[in-house]
Length: 130
Ligand SMILES: [Zn+2]
Ligand SMILES: [Zn+2]
Image (cartoon, rainbow, N blue to C red):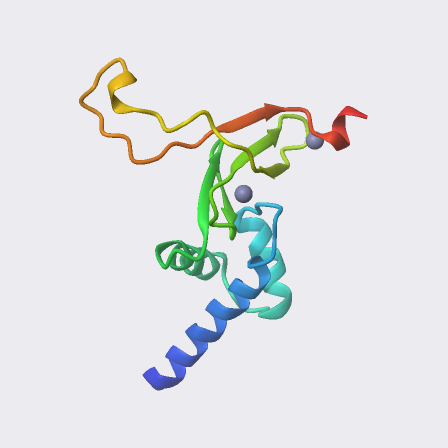
């Protein structure tokens, strides 16, 4: 295969993966994204999907959120918080004003320079509490 054709294939894979995730608000893991991409590109490997996800993160099109040991991918780059249900593991987007920026001077050890902070809320979601 010529390198031009290989590049075209790589670009197509990246675009298919992007289309699968771009409107997804459920914060899927790489495995969940892989299951969906496989329906569109049956021969793709999990490694390829994973590499493309990392590329989308590096290109600032996706953000990663760590929950336990798994990475969840989030196309919403606008500043927001997450509510994680301890019962069903679903991740919800929450928009509310956080109590100001965390000032380095208020940290117990002031040698750290804070650039941002992330707040995650844990509990029971509306589906699980009824
Ligand atoms: Zn739940
Ligand atoms: Zn989110």
